[in-house]
Length: 228
Image 1 (cartoon, rainbow, N blue to C red):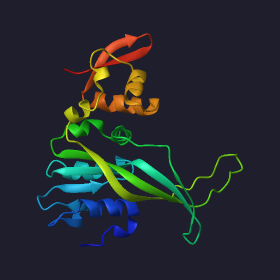
Image 2 (image 1 turned 45 degrees about the vertical axis):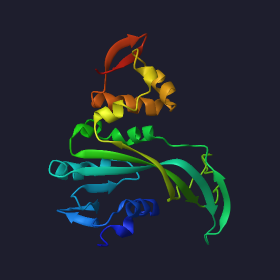
Image 3 (image 1 turned 90 degrees about the horizontal axis):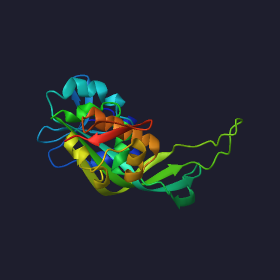
């Protein structure tokens, strides 16, 4: 096992990488000028990405045509917010009302939505239970904004997963309620149960994958229809 890049990874990234490793796999492998998080014994290259996907662009451009690659993206389906002091003593703990779902990955896929049609690329969404470790509340800045400590994400359990290996896998996620008639982005948001901005990104990605096509307008709102 190499130590390349290990010092830069956070606890969530490290925990997911350890969870994914199987006998015969190797971590932190150098491919040219790139370092791969995990190389499977069967040759698949695995990248754990806890944040945005855009930093992976150059690596995918260089390696994807010649190698099978998997992006593993952890989404916090359950989370606790734990406040600790400077010595690491727990000050408070509460369960967050925010619950991530598989749809959250489309917030990341906007970087390269059409690339999921590449036969060598798979995106795996891990639905996780996480602890978010943060410093005490820091009050407000002079502008009145609340100061927020982004803290650390720590994995406690994987509660589910969804593998997206093609545009068809993404199409299969769409609720049945959207299959009979053309729909607006707002109706997509309602059917999926997400914020409007995420629904806009879902629609953008699915159009880039040619899962959705234009179906005119209803008033000023563009209509989408699932491609046959």
